[in-house]
Amino acid sequence: MRAAGESRHPFYFLLISSVLNVILDYVLIIFGGMGVDGAAAATVFSQFFSGVLNVWWMFRHMDIFQIRKEEMEVSGAHISRLCVVGLPMGFEYSVSAIGAVVLQNAINSLGSAVVAAQTAGEKIRQMFTLPMESVGMAMATYAGQNFGAGKMQRIKDGIRDGLLIQIIYSAVIWGVLLVLNRPLVYLVLGENTSVIARDAGRYLFICSCLFVFHGSLMIFRNTLQGMGYSIHAIISGVWELAGRSLGGWLAVHAAGFTAVCLANPFAWIFALIYCIILVAYMIRRNS
Image (cartoon, rainbow, N blue to C red; front, side, top):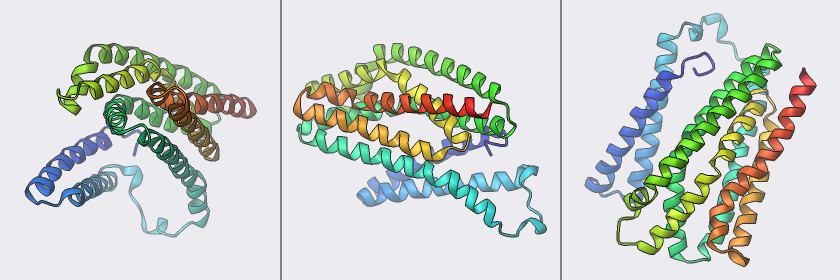
């Protein structure tokens, strides 16, 4: 739907899914007494419901997706191409997740206070970096359309404008978090955890100073994916794994909580360098 230019309704359906998830959490956990099982069921059902809404809207309201009988034949070539493009993208997320597990193992060895501080800071960090990832997804669609049309200059222009959006957003959010750092941490942790709240605020501040690297990574990585070079996204995930592993090692053996704060930025920077080099090479090769 996004590739066809319809990005509003997927967003609306995501909002519906999020609200439904919260409602079901309360119903199943508090009133139903289902605990963790209730949280899992609420998440799965709300995402499934969002998927159903997207499918319904796509086939009901978008003429480009109206399927005729003669188009129902299974195409092995198209299935193969979708797998070649799509599966590496999934593997890239898996590799990044492995890096998060490695980092979490290192954080666990530093004690429960550090775990609580990093967890709280990371939850808030993710909330503010999600828009960057959305811009990245838009870049994947844009790059794919223009790569298919052979318009390399438009891809370059898109990268430039996408980076400008990310830089401006990073600067604005840095200012917002500078003011709201402590209130947001207290919102997650409560006001009776001063030491943990201090470290969570420190984690959030250090990450926010380096948000621009995350935003830039979203532009260059999604450009690679949009151009069809999904296998390189996996390799960039390996570099993220290396960055988080470095942060975990430094946290345990040298820098302590400061390295925990820098682990994600290390991952962004390592992967970004690789993606910049590959995007520049691929654009030059196809120009």
